[in-house]
Length: 349
Image (cartoon, rainbow, N blue to C red; front, side, top):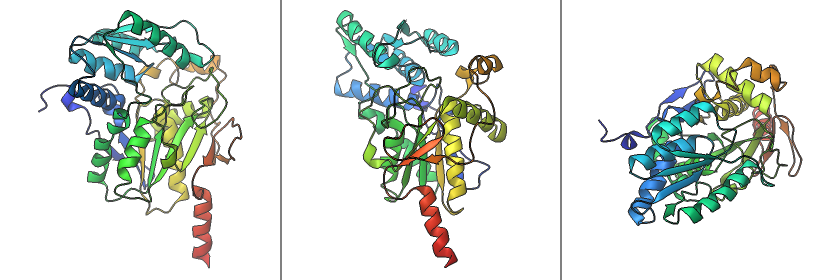
């Protein structure tokens, strides 16, 4: 038995998917999602080092799971929590935040840096009103990736080895934090990032109108460690949402579009590499907050979304090439397809 709800964060299930060599870490089964780990680690470390002072107001910018994690942990520790978000926030997350006791501020328009930029601009104004504040700074705080070392260790307790790690990128904390720890066990681990088309994290043009939430970014977070990532895949809104429906239908996992996108990429990798290779996919978000979008036919109709849009294979692109549908770029070494081709050729000889 845990002493508090905060103590019970983590130790989420690892399940084997129908692809024989793909294992899913169900971070979506934390109380409010994967960012529970981040909020817990950042705030407890801040209490420990004194940067989070008694009676300080915690202020953070988020439209999803980080907001919920900060609200849960921050209010449980006795602090006022203010969440700055934007109109894309779903009604269920809003209800949860208010139930947890957070004060929610919604910006009304984006600036030249999109919704993220508008939220940060508003955040700075709040700092003037609340000088005794603490800002978790999830995009650059090293205690964000540091929160995922226990997750990596949880994986290694259940798996003898891991060859490929596939995860979504938003703040950069989860994928890079898990990968850096796993590389202590296997220096040859291949790290695959999953991003959304319209996100600038990997030098794609910004599309502030993108429908996806939870992954991608309109700013470049400092917690993205590009040196540790071998390959990045981008999916557009339609592909990401259809992937999420496929995940529910085939694997019975009710998830959000970050998990859906990771599922499609991990499944494809599983088909490219040998069955003896172990692939871990991180599923960060559950589907309840997407009941009015991904799981709503009217939403699909209004946004001209269609089923049957996911190609069998992604398009390989070069650095600087803008993408519109599922594509990937190799950042280090051989691509997965090239590596498999070499493996097959050597085997045939």
